[in-house]
Length: 122
Image (cartoon, rainbow, N blue to C red; front, side, top):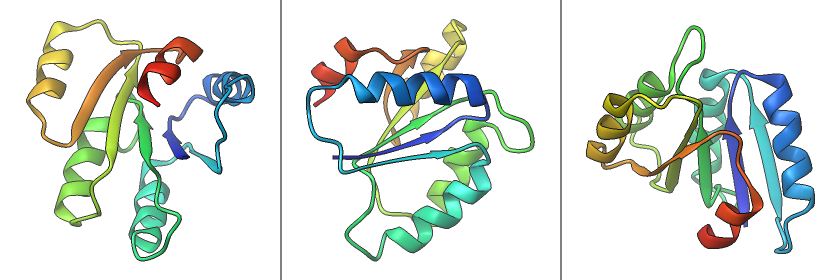
């Protein structure tokens, strides 16, 4: 399993690294990007190889490029499809509805990620 996180919050990324350390299934690769544009560049390169992530956890509220803008750029660049899960502190029902209406979004989960959700996902 390969997992990619896109979140500008260094503290939450550190927390998720700890959570993944306690996960009982093997994780071949985990990558963390604090800048969504860098994640897009990485995904464009990796879609040709065998290291494309199985799931992307995407934050919504980030400076410069938010999660919605990332999804739009992801689709415009025709990047290979994978599970994209919005991982957000937002409880805004409009965000949840917008995520549900987006074909790229697999799920909407509240931060922080927990082992129970990971277990049900994999």
